[in-house]
Image (cartoon, rainbow, N blue to C red; front, side, top):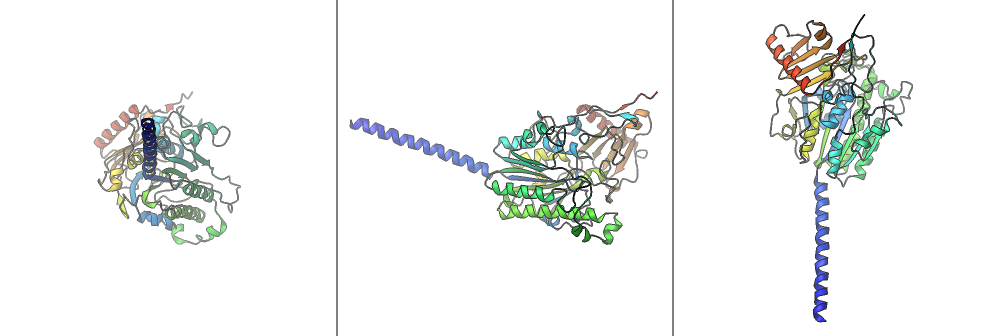
Length: 460
């Protein structure tokens, strides 16, 4: 009898030990998940390189400027496209828009009056594409997307629902849209406050979890509208007038800055700063009709620098030196691997992007020799852009115009961005060897990604 009791007692102790061990393992697992860095990605819409004070612009952006002093400012960051949807697809997948065949803003323009016919391109982000949100979610991250999406087949429900953020790895989402021209300018027309408030609530609700928060603003996309009180603060500004910048646009930029400041303040209040990678970026250059993109040529829609070179600020207090600056050349596709490396996750082999994590942490100075590619086989009515492809390697940038390529005319423009960032002097005839080398590289890349090409229409 005593022996049976002893055995029961020992069995009881063993069960307690097993339960305790399981509990410890579960607790450790949760703690390890919580130790993973948070990611806050803030994306502005149509915000050009020179439209922030920290980039020498005449705008009032005190919160973003302060943010720049706390992290790293990039001088040669590009977008993967000069219009929004392709850039957003590249951000989500780490793949070139040309490889995805998603090369224009959704749904694009119909151009029956133009000499080239655009290809039958992809007009939504396919669900089989693996997004950065899906990968992070698999590793315990809480994920959310608030603001502009522009990767669905249609913008608004019900036709947009099958391709909205919840189908691409986001636990929570709120899709917002640009205002109509008859919207009330006094009622947060670009949803800056609505997006910020929702993002702040997400931070509060998920402060104890690792999270990926994608805050995608509609500002400063047109229509250009803002409250009268805020506009009045910028009327009569001589520097804005010299740069051909409308006071309304300056007010919109300032409102966006205020929203970002509120969000960063909330991050600090919750004690999340040290363990959060924060990225501030734009989907393409600014619209030339509303503001000069000085010192760059043209603006949104164009493959000149004004359309594709954008501001990029990155802060991670425990990893990135405050007030640092980088000249490393990078593009949208590079965020995917960089984010994964920052949290210690494996980078998939089927993406095009290359991590610049070593640049952020100071273990590498990076390089301006990396090659970046662009492909736009469309006409963009808003800007006047024509079908073209481009490549940047080192200090040189080559633009190939498809109309001229198909008609046998001189099709190339070549610029030395080091000495001529405004792209004023075409060196294609002066440097034929450079032109030939870059044009060959561009052609080989187009074949590699199976880029869709425009075709010459049959004109009777």
